Length: 269
Image 1: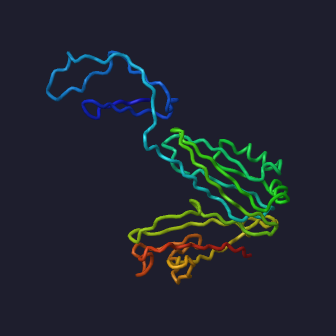
Image 2: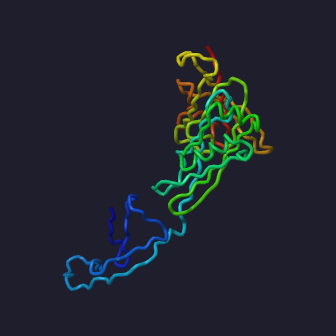
Image 3: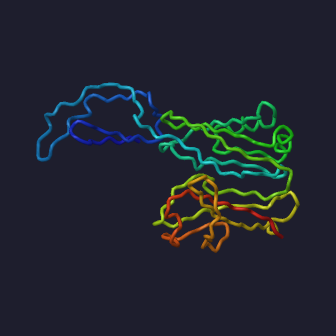
């Protein structure tokens, strides 16, 4: 469960399994008579003295990894559908399980929302049923959810996600991996995936609930920050994806201006 190794003649590192309940502040005890000085090649080391037993407190690294919330959920949801906001693709865990603490701005005004907040604690997702949404929209049409992430190094970060509620029977749209800023290189292919579902409020069977996707790529103008529509078209056969080949047409991403992807999910029968 634990492996120790010499790094140099004065430094030993220890790799500890995540099955061990070991955190910053835990005691580390070096057993006496076990650890000896690093033995040089071609030397006899039987007479090297072993270290005595000693105990120290473990401390976290000076530049500890910081958690980053990655939300995956719809920006607009019909109250006759269910709602799920996922954060399981968040990063910065340090290789161990993170602690998820959820809160919601209107929880003090809605007993159902408060109950959903309690239910979500410790989970990597926050969900609401259509009956809960139907009660919450009476209180607020803007659902503001906050997630506090803490990794095992006790480094914490807090982020928020907003979703608008509507009575309209609209499809649900989610960007896989979260709708966030990415750094794209022209030397690498680009792929962004969306997932959409037609509303189940009209009683249609699953095979009848089809959707279509329409993508637009906008370029941010450096002078005023306005968005200018471009003519670049995805090469993907599956319309759920927007894809560009590596070293796409001249001019794509070459001036390092920010770009914004806009996708619309439309229901059809």
